[in-house]
Image 1 (spheres, rainbow, N blue to C red):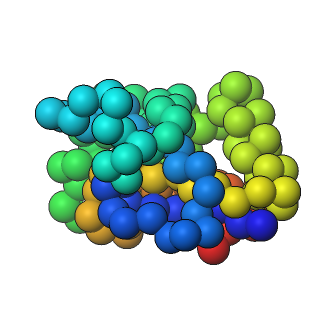
Image 2: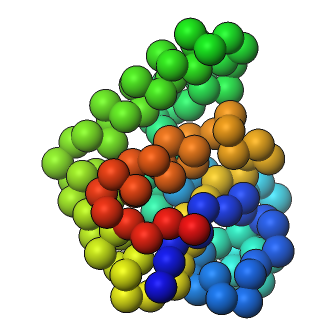
Image 3: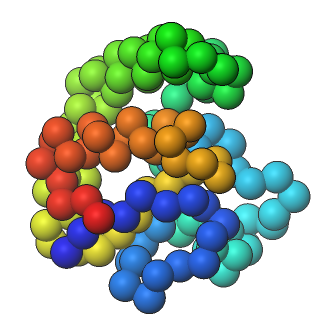
Length: 128
């Protein structure tokens, strides 16, 4: 059993399981009925997305210092009790079922999902 970190909208792995969208907003121009069939996500869970202000920091980060500022702020958001419990739940589920979490960004290294990957590992998740 494993959790995968994916780019939403990309082709699914046959063993991927449920795809969870950790994004602030649904995909633009895509009817809600096509979110799952279009390989976007099966469940939308914006709780694990950066806040709007934090997301702007990440999107505009051009230097390592700016990226570290984004990372610090996003990690602080994920350290709230609700988000800590969510990460613990996902970590536990990763040992019992296949599922994935993701975002739209093309490059994982410049996306909150790279940090989310690290946070899930810290929480004890089995991450591919």
